[in-house]
Image 1 (cartoon, rainbow, N blue to C red):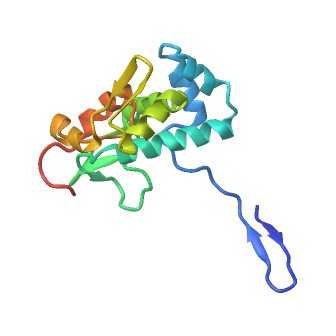
Image 2 (cartoon, one colour):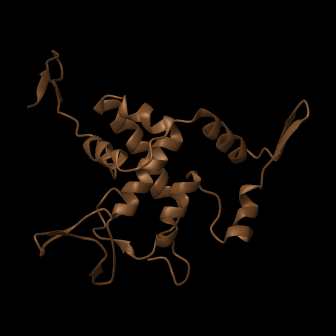
Length: 186
């Protein structure tokens, strides 16, 4: 249902906004979170209302999409997210039901799991601050007798072959299997 705000010179029509695309919806998040070890960050997310949780899951989805170049190509060039994906004619993940293929591509479970862990990672402010320092070019810092050194993002390409991402360690390892390692980018 659209709402019209009338002005004398120009009417403005406000249409309902659909939630931003994310790999995991709040209800799916709660289901997945129930099956993994509870961390304080996940407990924080479980306490959020659906609107707040949708925002965090959207940010986690954007982090996953921008983390690396993925194998294959988007299932549909118009889709806003990187998954589902395909290679020429083979779609990687299909929805099945009662042993019958329903013929609908879906987000892989590993991508959903990575999104859950990335959302939890984003809830820990010390990780976010550390990532921002690294991205800003900080090589090391010291406070009293404690010091911390970082590898420069540009050097990570040589070390890991993939480069720097904003993903936490666990989501990074989960998404690694989808990384484009050879061939050309489609």
